[in-house]
Image 1 (tube, rainbow, N blue to C red):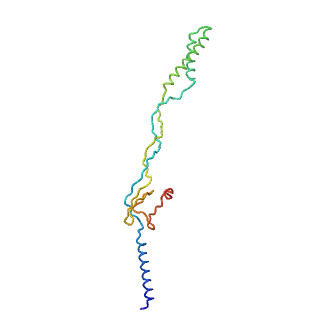
Image 2: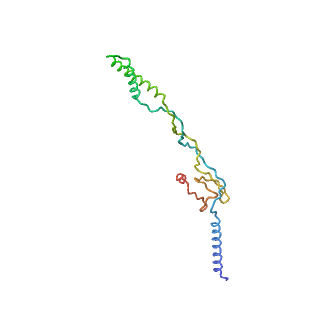
Image 3: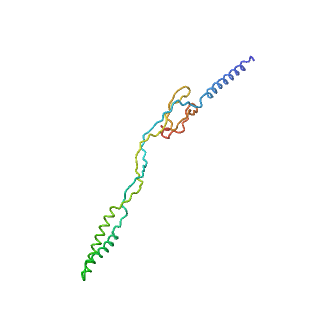
Length: 182
């Protein structure tokens, strides 16, 4: 095998194979994941409105007879009977009518005062809106190690213990559109 052409071809073939092996090793030795070193939640203060309800005892007036008919009727009857007892002869009718009118007026006023005192206790649910301050997690600042180098990235979900890597770059699939373009 003293032919220089054959020796040269073998050397070139060997060099190409070596370069391919080194290149393949470099590609194969690229990490598939970055190791997460630290995760810090990014928080934002927000106001949350919620309904707060409680059961309370309240005192209410009982439903009223607005015209106080019962008081007028009973008072009129009692007044008529009393008026009839005091009248005599032709004045008997006038005394009866006057007694009935006076009794109706008195019965009306008596029923009014009695109704003002009539109350009932009842349970009632009272609700109101209240504002509550709250801290919400909006993102995570993640410190990671890739190929011995430390880096930081903001992620919008918890990354876990490692982050996928493709062609030497982190794969971050959850970035908002504004963050991807910016």
